[in-house]
Image 1 (cartoon, helix red, strand yellow):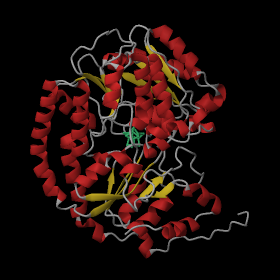
Image 2 (cartoon, helix red, strand yellow; image 1 turned 90 degrees about the vertical axis):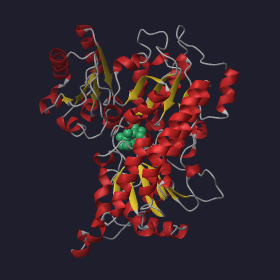
Image 3 (cartoon, protein in one colour; image 1 turned 135 degrees about the vertical axis):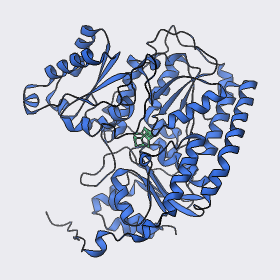
Image 4 (cartoon, protein in one colour; image 1 turned 30 degrees about the vertical axis):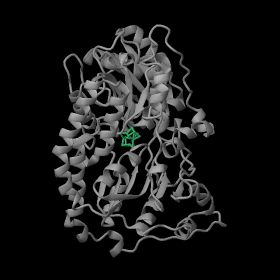
Length: 537
Ligand code: CFM
């Protein structure tokens, strides 16, 4: 069943007129006549609307910094911000020889009322000293939470002093939750600092092995990064650093020696990819290791970039071996999935990345969107010059970098690079819109009201989103598959990940549970109200 403009109109009419006006710009029906329609994105959620978005602190400390295992990440603020970001994102990390792993810990200055009144700098200083004494990390980050910005603690001065006192790197991030309209602002703040203070600060001048790459925007949720690394290493690549899943500050410092940057989640890390290219001449390639077809395409694109006969042969051999191994298993699961439909609504890139994997199982994504993506994640990178900055986006300084006089090195001739750009997605991604099919819905910052309304209209067989909305969906009798945390499962990337995903999704369909659910609103009356736009209440 498709949604018509009339259905949309009826949905909007249930909203106050001001809200309608806003939300209309964030919802599209894909219409064959316009291949790449314009959408509004990365703007403020209307207060009072139940959004799935997080805050700038979540994007900085939670997403980009948090997975780096050999740094201690201090949250400067009241205890809640640290507590609720403690282990809730499933960025797994292993201890390695000579690389410590602090990922299981949570560090907070636990600010109290007196710290808010008299300032928290002394407490932060004491905390850094304690961390150094007990754990001796090689580097520390400090992330500011909302009250820190409001009271004006100078975390940069505290970091500078601590750096002098202890002789280790201490980085301060002004990523107060309110710094942007979503976690996306926090990604940008973290990216800027890493480009300025970490990447390229290591001693290495040359890549330690042939076919050296960095893997950017891979956070090792449920072990995704480990599966991708398994495949890459098997083919013969040398992984210099992963940003930032199971990542290491030590390795990131030498990221400048890689021959190519792979970008999985462009939303959270495209800033780093661009700046490394300007500073060190390293091109970046958009990859997607979610789904068999996308994984194969990414591996072949990489082989084209390196243009080495042996590497290309090995790429094909690994692809053939892996497909022969996993496809028969996936085919069995796919029998349970044929002709099903899905909603795929995730943060900033997975709403697009998982559609191919669904399709391989026989599941069509009929509604998709992102929580906090920008227009280019929907419409492709070409649209970037036409995105008008607003007060919120201007809040984050755009870092200016130049070619490093000693370390900038072209990886191939400009002619060859230009020729390759015609064949593989170097410095480019197309966005979600072009992959959506006729009549399908694209929604930016989907809210809970719209979730329920679209479910009633489209009756999807599976809903993939996150923890904030899955339970109400399950109570409606629809299986929900979290695509942020993977519901304690995973990996879902690469060849093994596709098998896990096929198993988990078909398990959702095969479960008889859904028929036994009587949601609370079926038995007890639900609250209802009326809109009175003329009134003042
Ligand atoms: Fe990138 Fe992510 Fe995502 Fe993201 Fe996230 Fe995440 Fe995500 Mo949750 S970095 S934009 S801020 S792929 S935590 S690993 S799943 S919303 S779609």
